[in-house]
Amino acid sequence: MKIGIANDHRAYEVKEQLKKLLEDYDIIDYGCYSNKRTDYPKYAITLGNAIINNEVDLGIAMCGTGIGVSIACNKVKGIRCAKIDNKDEAKSAKEHNNANVLAFSAQVHTAEEIKEMIDIFINSTFSSDPSYKIRIEQVEKYEETNEY
Image 1 (cartoon, rainbow, N blue to C red):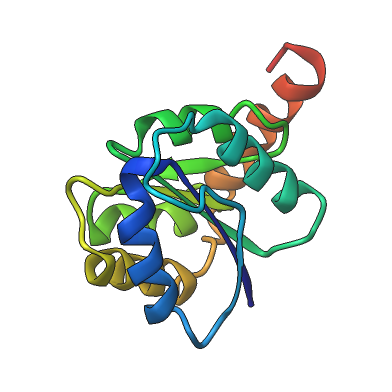
Image 2: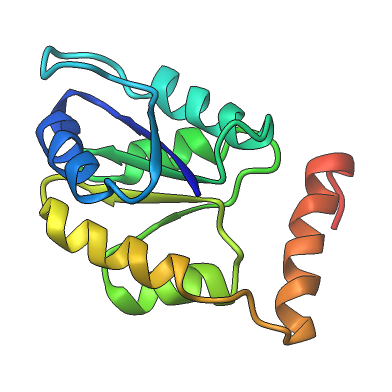
């Protein structure tokens, strides 16, 4: 599995630690590449586009709170970015929403905690319950037509 990672300066240290923990995966780092102040949208949007262009299978986005990168990723058509705060949300992000990007707070979570949540997400399966598929289709239709 190819995993893309994007972050801002506030998540740089956690990202570097996380990359070491994800050594079993092929990691593509979309930046940023230091703890020097930067703006998250360009990195998050680049990650979103990498998912859409099939450069990576899953995206991990991080900033201080995880909120900013989540908002930016979700501006890319076709991205379903879920901001994850716990193991249950990691499981639901896959089972209920079939998310393709996970966003995390580098202020709240350690690299080890993030890795645990990523593992739970990866080992979960999108539910066969038709209600979840219908909801995703409604979002996709809105992206295309501004109607649901």
